[in-house]
Length: 125
Image (cartoon, rainbow, N blue to C red; front, top):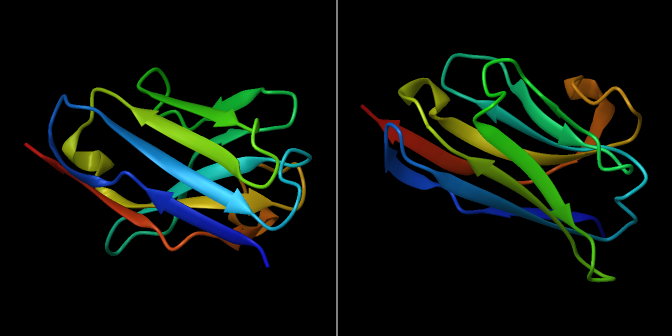
């Protein structure tokens, strides 16, 4: 059974930092992209960042230079993906989702077939 569990969300002031974690289990995740998406009220879910098997990383323009995606696949049964978020802005407020893709179209919502439950990030001004 595939499971993705996010943690690390919370309330932070503008300019602050948070680190989100995603613990993925139940299949091999290193072959395809792992991504982070976010959704705020009244808006569509949007791509934030992705990391692929080679270690290459990709970012949405709105977070590039502020957010860093990384992974830790040292454990055999749990694949960890992180999102380090610095210089947070009020517009970063959203529910953040970790997801596992089934193809290499890493920025496409439809490429992801497994999702976590989401973790709330709130940035106050």
